[in-house]
Length: 305
Image 1 (cartoon, rainbow, N blue to C red):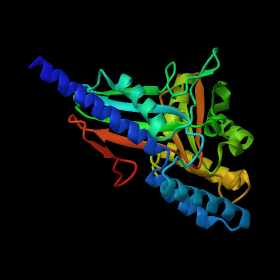
Image 2 (image 1 turned 135 degrees about the horizontal axis):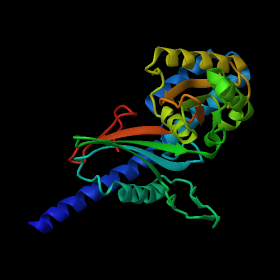
Image 3 (image 1 turned 180 degrees about the vertical axis):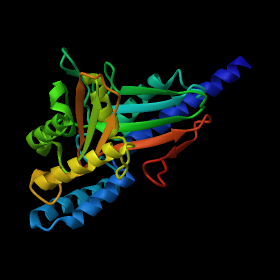
Image 4 (image 1 turned 90 degrees about the vertical axis):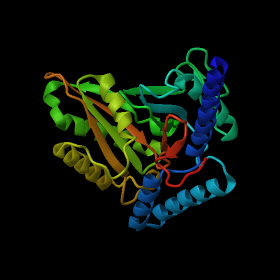
């Protein structure tokens, strides 16, 4: 009986690894539904020949990635997983090991570019797995037997504008806005616009930075749950678009796909702000597992692995 139980668990592990390997590779080839739809909206708003050429190239790229079954960008990034797992999910103890194995397999079947370089040794591991990589962010859900996993490919370009700092008290929320605009106008063109801008506001720098990355996981079109937060998102988005960075940073009607703010209660004396950006090829995907390790792809309607 014990052997049968162990075999069942091993079968579950292998099924989970196989699905996540295919899903990780899939994430590099197909944009999520909301990003694809938003790019279509922005494309028709452009009225210059150069901006239209850039968008035409983007959509030709997406078409070829589908037809040729290969990543839509050569930089498939450092793999990050954001895991929301129930305490009763059968593989909760195995997820980290399984995801590392899934990345190794995805690197081959993608194929994914080798992007894990060990710090100090300056050695590329050759399989996208290294110390603390793939990065796994954990959120434990009590009394649940399901797991929801976000895959995010953190490319070099879209990671370049990323930054965080603690503001002086008198800078206030105006300081948050100035911080965002200074960074996007300095480095935004390097991140392959139009960008998705994630902003975290908190009391310490590490919380703000983490929230700014989690803001990138929100579906486009969603708003901050606080009306004032939603208003600030809209005003920052309008201001960044008014700069007209345009697709590819070459000028155009829009600079961003959206602006998302996530916040945590702060210390009375400090406001910390973090900034993360997603490029036009915003490869963010979400999948849900039930306790039988059956899956549903949330981010790409009708996707079958």
